[in-house]
Every structure is written in C-alpha cells, then in structure tokens.
Image (tube, rainbow, N blue to C red):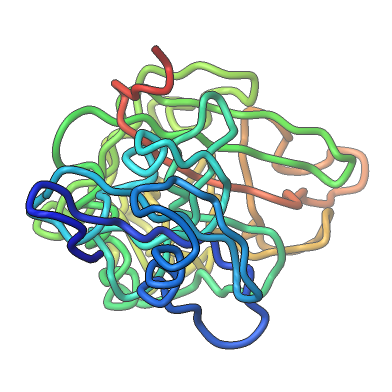
Length: 280
C-alpha cells in the first residue's frame, strides 16, 4: 500500500502467476504509476503476474480484510492476494463461484499437502480463520468433485470457527446445496458445534480413543465422523482404514459389493461474509 494523496491510499493487489520467486506488489504499483494514472483498477500484466492498483479512502488496515473486500474494490479476477488476517502468506480468492468474493481456507487437488498435523501446526492457520469469521455473519461453501468429473456443493449460511480457548469449535448451520448435509448427519455424527481434534490433541466425543490419531487427520470429529475433508488423499477407491477424503451424504463409506472405500478427487472449502455486496 502507498500514499497517493491526503485523502486516498493505494492498494496494490497481485494475482500471482509465478513459476520462480515472489512478485513485488510495491514495484508493480510504482510501475503502474509510470504507465498510467494512479487509481486505475487495471489490470496490468507483466512478466511476473497480473496486478491491480486501486486508490481507496484511508483505512486502519494495510491490506483488505478478505477476498470479499477485494471483490468490492472492483477486482473480480480469481487469484492469489494478500489479506489482512495473515501477512505470512497469500490467500486464494475465488471471484466466480456463486457471486464470487470467497476466501479459500482449504483446498485438496492432489496429495502434496499432509493434513495429519500437530495442534501447534493447525493453530497457526486457525488464527487466520478465527480472524476471518470472528465478527459478523459468514457463509461456508464446500465444493466436491469425484473421479468421474461429477461436482456437488454444500453451503452453510451460518459459519464460524471459535478461538483456541474454545478449541476452534465449528459452527456450520443453515445448509443448502446438492451434496447433502454431512456436517449434521445424525445425533452421533454431528460435526456442527464440535471442537477440533488432532493426533496429539483429543477433543472429540469418542470415549474409546482419539479420532484424529486413528484417522490420521485434524478435523472436527464427533464420535467419530460423517465427513472428513482433511483425510488422506487417495486416487479414488482404496482399502483399509476409512481415512480418505469423505463426505458421507454423497458417497457411501464402503462399497458393499467390493468392500472398498471411496475418496474424492478435489475439495475446496471457502468463506465470505453472509451480507456480501456481490449478491445484491
């Protein structure tokens, strides 16, 4: 961000398309001022990526608070942007699905990321998620894709993740969509209102052990699960412990004919304010 006058400040927002290194947003805005008038919403393309420089009234924050605010500035390109809650790394913004403005909080497209992490490791990421959902009302959108290119989604119009003192308790209510409400599956398997558990922090309701340790993932387990989007990434069907990426209201947990389990190909979880300007 840089000063452009006494009345406005300039956000520089980059959609990174890098293959090597990081792109300097400050340098991009400086280049923008040389190439065109300050305040232009661009976009301008360089060898490093696509960037926008936007002049807005001064704020107490150095960066937009989420992808919904970036969208409200007139920037509607999918991409990677810096947002205020977490300056240690960029955030992925989905500006197209269901009106756009979504901050992606989890994405599974391959097995490159291990979700069997410690409480401390999850704690660092949940600080951002708590900051995103701690004020106002928010939505959660879950997008699922199977290995036959079929896609479904689940949206929750009441979404929040509590603080660490409340063990990052999940609120996910007011469901709509075509994937089924696996987060409120039954009295025994109800993820809404549950605390987060990891292999080294047992906060679930299963008296016989630690669900996070057994399934090898951090998740809002009950006793234990009807959904687990942080499960192990498999190439479709697999055998053994039911520890894959699972959404119990779409696919059955076990194929009765072959005995195999099923895991999804792609999953994304994303959030935005419930009162999102892009919907008006």
